[in-house]
Image 1 (tube, rainbow, N blue to C red):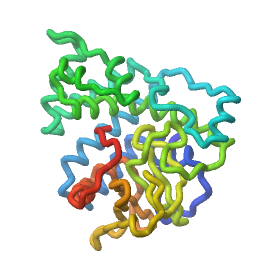
Image 2: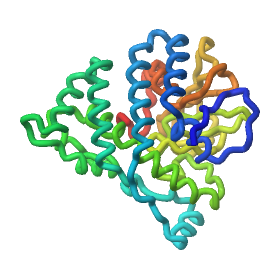
Image 3: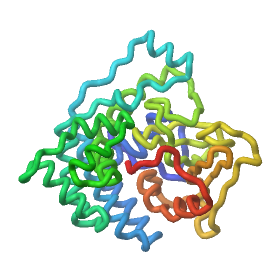
Image 4: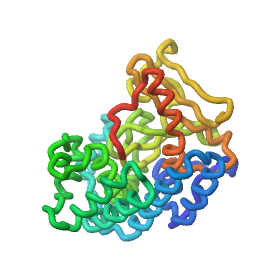
Length: 314
């Protein structure tokens, strides 16, 4: 079922996290991504090359999602109850089912997009496309790469063997797996209907941390999972990463030119999180595009001494 991305200012019904994730990511169409990219390109012309590349990647992922072939993840009722009682995520990242054929096809597509639209990734994209085809070299073991990324294992060995940097392999690997991971998350979201909102700083589906949050029209704070793109309601105040609620530890900064964005920083753990106040937006909200077109805020946060937790290219 295809729905338009969340549009600030429209009458809002109560949505579950899974419903919001569908509207903002899982069910967003290529046309909707293209329209959102066109709007952002006019607002932030300096980001035009980045918007062109990432919008093409997101459209390729949207097309790939429609052809995912994977088994559903089944959780035993007793295990589900245990997780509910202990406020545990439904699964760990290494339990996601990846459709290998779909992921390989998508990775090849993203490599070619990088060659055409992303100069900094172009050489890595060309080299990786050659490894995928086995063009005169040993073919890259994608199962090993995907397994290591999902299990947060060091991929330096795979990077050294392939001649591609860890950062580039991380980007291409996570980008290729994204449709499978998101399809799993959408399916697993049905289990959350029977569970209360935890309001924690980690994803209730996979336990990963957020890479973006937003305030909806009612002022509720929603977090976006950095891995599976699930969305969940969380507390408005305090650090999402270390749970500190000490006001002396919590700070934020913003720009008068971009009143819809704030960056919340915590002195206790040294982490930051970009937050979008959708009540101040006059456009449709597509989290993944907003994430990549606010890199200047990441730079400012890092200049102030803050970091993203567990940062790796997704």
